[in-house]
Length: 181
Image 1 (cartoon, rainbow, N blue to C red):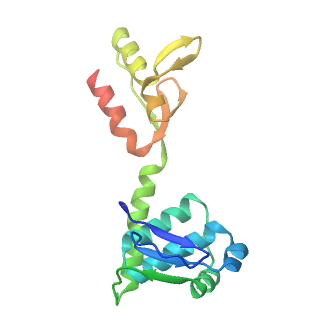
Image 2 (cartoon, helix red, strand yellow):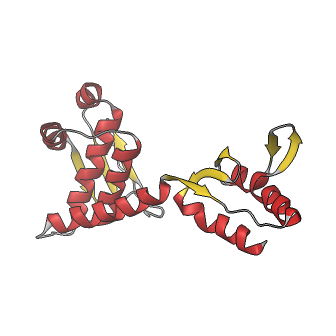
Image 3 (cartoon, helix red, strand yellow):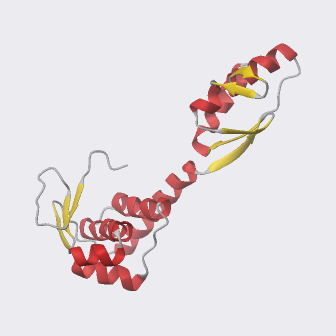
């Protein structure tokens, strides 16, 4: 989403030429709130200064993945102490548009990362059935254990025969394998 964009976050006064933003965080803020809360607030603050919805989406994704949601009062207190220097700045009249566009983008990205349960209907032909099982679950190495296969490649788990749990974005891979056989 943010190809080659870098944000430097430091407790010292350092400047970075190839970064889109440099943020100086006072050490006492870092100690008081912790690294994850501060980073979430930094992304939020940089998004506000640049007016870029993609940075706001990154802030939402970071908060969701790390289970960090600063309270409004903490967000204001941390943002007041940050020194944010950005390379490009857009004076947005409507911050809410940037906020909600970033929220929608983050929700669509997070939706693709969620786990789903997929059930495959096996073919009637026993040879095709075993070939499909081999493609999805891999080769049998001992009783009840399998190695390789599409599930291992996609970092999925087998729940029961012909049922597995994978990330939502990998559903087309399963469909492709089942249609091929």
